[in-house]
Image (cartoon, rainbow, N blue to C red; front, side, top):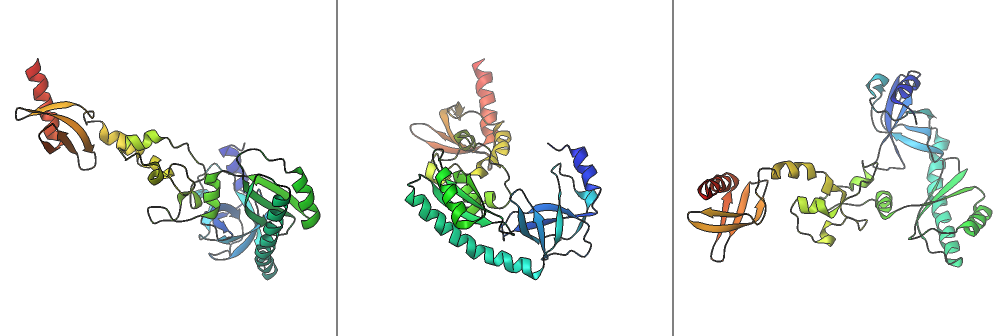
Length: 286
């Protein structure tokens, strides 16, 4: 793994860095460059872990000294020419043809896998197929068939349901593009305890995202809710107000309101009032 020191030494060979997007993806990736004429909306050729790709510049040139991440910056190879741009367009239609071929062969071989995407590298030296499967799939025969029909390197990559949502994209319940398809790099484990901590109704369908798993945004406000809940008494705590005993049945940590109930009455009281009465109740009990 590259250390931050090594990355910084590597970056000394370049003056600038910019953010790129691949194939109109919503997610950006940073690359280094010495091309001083580079500007937003220019297309460039870069090498990624997939191979050669066409990227679109989405930020102005920035001084390399401002790059603070420990992730390695790969260099931009060159500004894309018309041939590169035309090749990239052709690759989309060819990838769709390859997708159809792969789907047909999967069906013929009766493989338990669901094909999601097919993407060529810019030079068409490799095609990457991503798929969903519940278990491991023996696709050795599929590889042989595809290699004979497509005449390039074949890579089959099994992805999870969250990865599928990241690839396909969509609009979340907030009305914004999915976090996984815009900025999330890693998927943390989301526990139902986060929903409980935020006192949300445990309606699993409503708490699930496009991937069918608990929505990632449950983690965003979890620490804030934990902090806001600290001064609140527990649900079920009994408190006497004006000589009448109540039980705390719910609370709203944002408005600092607490719901009190007994067999005959329901009250909505602010937190300070409840804490004051609890303190008086304890003093009188002693």
